[in-house]
Amino acid sequence: MPEPMEKTEALVLRVAPFSRTSHVVTWLTRDHGSLSTVIKGAQRPRSTFLGQYDLFYTCELVFYTRERDGLHIARECAPLDPRAALRRDWRAAACASYACALVGRVVPRGGHISGLYSLLSSGLDALTHGRPRQAFIFWFEIQILSLLGVAPSLTVCPGCGAGLAGPAQGETAFSCVRGGLLCPSCAGRRRSGRSGANASGAAHEAPLSRGALTLLRQWQRFASPDVALRSRCSKQQMLELSGILGMFLSYHLDLLPPGRRIALEMASLRTE
Ligand SMILES: [Zn+2]
Image (cartoon, rainbow, N blue to C red; front, side, top):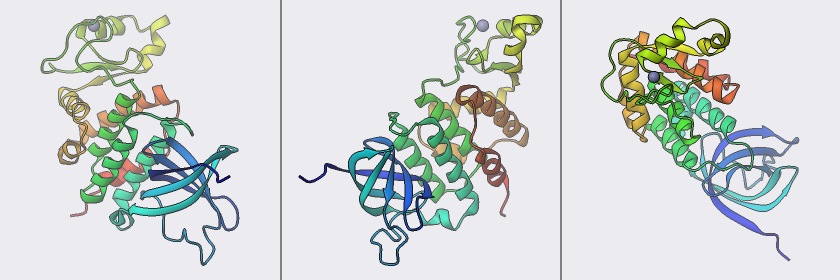
């Protein structure tokens, strides 16, 4: 009896050696979430898999669904979009690597998060066609947090429920523990009671300027990366947002992928 197979569109998240001639490829698939396949004989000179997959590729993948030790066996694989530009632009490649690592961090093998496939696919496309900016990284992080259901609250104070939808006034406070932007009165309360039980919460709190808040709100609202690729931010806003989002992501994910700092540095370099 033939073994059951599935065919799906899949993005390459990671390629690792499995034996002298084989690879394990971790994919984010359109229909089955994250999964890993063994590509048998991938590095043999006459392998039909040669050149068919690499980092950041979208492929059509056919795999046997029987899983062994968490691994499926790939039967066929063909590139649908190799995103060749990411192999020539090292700044975009650093951002793409971080995006793939972050996705790998939030979705366990066998896990499925609705909307994640199209987020990563559109993000990699944007990096292929546009100039990478730090704003892209922040936009991607905010969108991932939204898909995980832990998006920062930027229009309602998580402390008391007061509406904060209007234009931000002056400097406000952002709390990772509370889950977003605090109204002046909740922020004041926390500041005045920073000792004792509030001390750990205060460690996850940071001031947020009006300009940085406006950017955060904008990136949270738009599911398309175009707005992030066009955003212009000052160096000070970048530093603020890098700190706040890094802190918020670490709070929810425990550990950030190591490529974040490199991606942010690469994206901030000027080429002109
Ligand atoms: Zn409040």
